[in-house]
Each structure stands twice: as C-alpha cells, then as structure tokens.
Image (cartoon, rainbow, N blue to C red; front, side, top):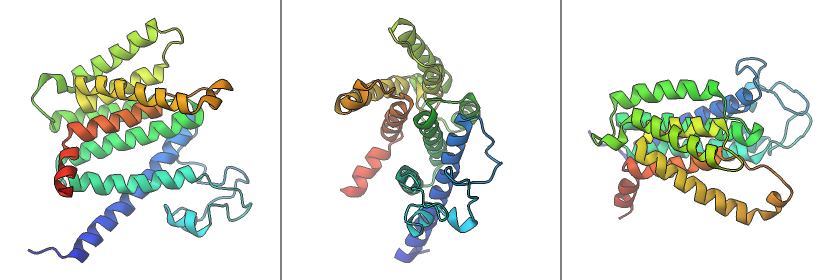
Length: 257
C-alpha cells in the first residue's frame, strides 16, 4: 500500500497534537505535585484571578495564540514557557515516532521524555523533584526496559544504571561542600534505568557542563544569590544521551543525507 504525502501530513499532524496534549498534562502534573496539590481538583484555572478555564481555553498552543498569551478575564500574562514546552512536546512525539520507526523503543523514549518534562517544570517552579513523580516513572521504566532491552551489553542494564546513577550522585553530594539535593540524586538513578550505567555518567557530565555554561552566562542571577535548580540540566543531559544511545542521532543524519 502506497502512503501519500497527505497521509504523512495527517499522521504526523495527529502525533503533534497528541504530543502537545500529553505535554500540557505533564506540565500540570509537574506544577501541581511540586506544590503538593491534587492533579484532579480544582480544575485548571488562572493563577492570578482563579478564573476557571473553559475547554476552549485549554487547547494546547491554539488557546495561547487565540488568547494572545493572556487570561480572558483578568488579562494577566500566561507564561510563554508553557506554550514552548507544549510545542516541544508535540515535536518530541513526532520525531521519536519517526526516528525510532514506531518501534517499542519509541514508547520507552516517550516515557523518558515526559518524565524529564515533568521534573523540569516542578524543579523550575518550586525547586522540588517529588517522589510521587519519580516512583511511577521508575516502575514504568523498569518494566519497559526489561521488556524492551536496548542492548545486551551489561553497562546498559537498567538495574545497574539505577545503582550507578544513585551512587555517583550520592558520593558527589556527600563530598561536595554544598551537598546535592535528594531529588537530583534520585532523578539520576531513574535516568540510569532508561540509559544504563554508561548513560547515567554521560548524563551527569553533560548536565555539569551545561549548568556551568549557564552559570557563567547568567552571572547576574548568581550574584544576587538566586538558586539554580540542577534538575533541568540533568533532563537536558539525559535527553542528549538518550538521543545518541537510542540511535536517533544516526537516523537523523541518514534522513538528512
């Protein structure tokens, strides 16, 4: 059966919509769990005037554009970071399904992405990485990794990845002057489940370099004593590591060549 260009447009367009909707949901999960709030009640509302959002105000990306980035009632600005993360989530769904050819590994990759999205939001907003977020993703990741093994090499074993991720961060926190947050330690352990021991170490190295560059170029924020959460840098490092180890980088290069 021949698939036309319009079929591809429809399929990947629907994937973008699905990814953006899931992104919107996990943004809410990250924001509310960090504040120890229910993800069910109250319904989505404006944080400034408490206006309860209608269904047409909850459409990812579209609602932000039609409302011009403002609450329909009090005109308070809706942070642009939310719509950016929704767009990235849609693109992540499309690219993961395309580069991993709708394989079982694509499910693992998307689970990993939405874990990192959730903790990025919670750590940025409240400087917290809740256990209630990490535990479900840990269990899901272990189940997925034992069903969908990325490789037979021992250094990609999910349990070893968990131990190494936890151990390296724990030792780093123990011997460092300022210590390391418990959430960061547990996060790298969960990341290790998805990318293995070698991937966990690579994630930490990448996160440290990215965090260092950020600290240098945002010197004003550091001088004011503003605390910089490390979770988002671990998330970026984890995504970069997974993008390489899962073969997505090679597939992208082949597609572009």
